[in-house]
Image (tube, rainbow, N blue to C red; front, top):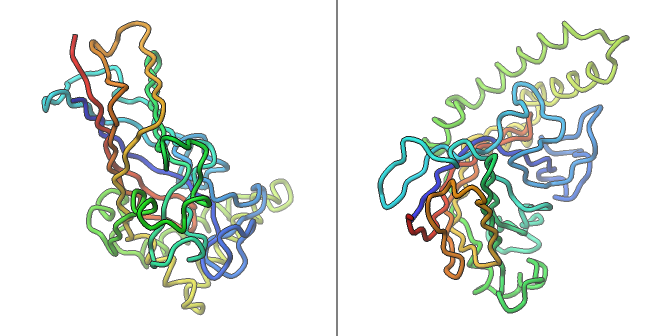
Length: 286
C-alpha cells in the first residue's frame, strides 16, 4: 500500500450563523465579504485561493508532506510537495440544518482528491452510488444510510488543531490580529488605495465587535478550535498519469481508495482553516 500524508491551509468563503449559508456577503455573522472581494461562494479550496487575506498567502495551500510505501517512509518521492486539490464546487452541505438533523454534521459534496506533481497526477472522486454517478447530496439527503458515508466526527478546542494552526489562545489570536490589521491600515493611503483601506477597516470592525456582540465573538473563537474528521471511500473513476514511471510501481484502479482527514481551526477573519489527512491506495512496486 502507498499512503500519502498531506496538510495545509484551506479556504472557504462562506457566511456563518445567523446568516444563511448561501448569503453572498455576510451580514449578521462573524464572516463577511469585504471591499475588493467577489461575493462569498462557500467553495472549499485547497489551492487557487480567492483574494487571500493577510497573514495567509497563496502559498499556504494543501500539499503532500510525506509518502509511505509498505509501511516504510520514503526519504524522497515524486509526490512529496505535490498539490492536493478538491473538486470544483466542493462545499460543506449542512445548509443551516436544512439538509441534516444533527448539529455539526457537515457532509462534503462533491468530494474527491486530485494530487499533482510536476510529472505525476492521480485523482479519484467519491460517488454516492457507483451505479448513478450523477447523484448529489440533494438527491440522497433523505437516506440516512447513504448520508452516513460522508458523516463526520466533531471535536471542540482540539489540541491537534491548536498545534497545527498556532491558535493557542483564541481571544489573544483575535487581539493580535487586530494589532496586525491596524498596522497595515496605518500604512495604507485611503486616497490612493481606498479599496484596501475599506477592507482593512471592515476586518478591524468585525474584531472590535468581539467586545460587544457576544453572538459573533463566541463562534469566531469556537471555530478556531473545532475539528471535523472524515473517513471517505473514493470509488469513482480513477486517473493515474505517470508517463515517466516516476512512481516506480503500479497503483490499483479496480479497488477503492480511502482517505481520512480533518478540517479545523477555521479563522473567520481570513476565511481559512487547516486540513490534515492521508490517502491510501493499492500499490505494487516495480
